[in-house]
Amino acid sequence: MNKVILCSLLGSAVALPLLFASSPVYAAEVKVTWENAEKYTDVRPANESRKRFRERTLAALEEHIVELASKLPESQKLTMTVTNVDLAGQVWPSQFVGFGVGAANDVRVIQRVDIPRMTFSYTLSDEQGAVISSAEEVQLKDMNFMESNIRQNRGDTLSYEKIMLEDWFNDTFTTNVAANEE
Image (cartoon, rainbow, N blue to C red; front, side, top):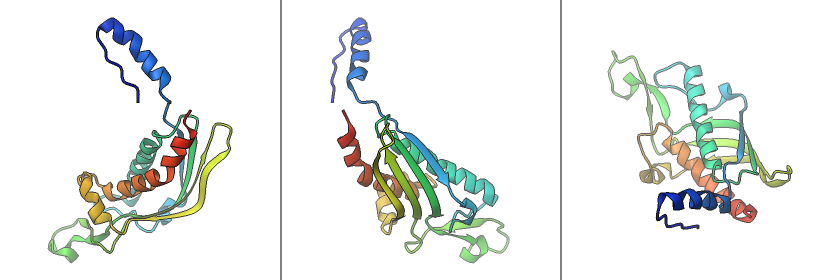
């Protein structure tokens, strides 16, 4: 890690470009394809249209994947094709879970048995297109999702799924980043 002690404004103007010039550049190109998203196991809304909820949910997951890929070198490209998503929990009519007959909204109930899952294929390639890492069918699931989420913000509506992706990403790509840095 580069450390620079800045003593003056002039010194910082000279040192800052040198700091960035010697550091590897990160932010791999990312392409995510959501294949047959309308047929995914569970991307059901509690209180909005299915299409709008699905679009918003998949956009948030894609944004998180892009954020994770920012740790990869700029020269690399991550391509993912997602074939299934099953969000943590299940959506139930509110009267089924004790909110009364007059309540019109559905609610997502999170229980230990309703684990988050995601199925996808991926390819990580270098700038020449050579494959660094790939898999045809990753079946990601987090059976310990309720405990693992303690370390993250429970206020995020997709925190279980994001942590699951983050754990997979760190397990899968940490060695690839180190091996391909120059």
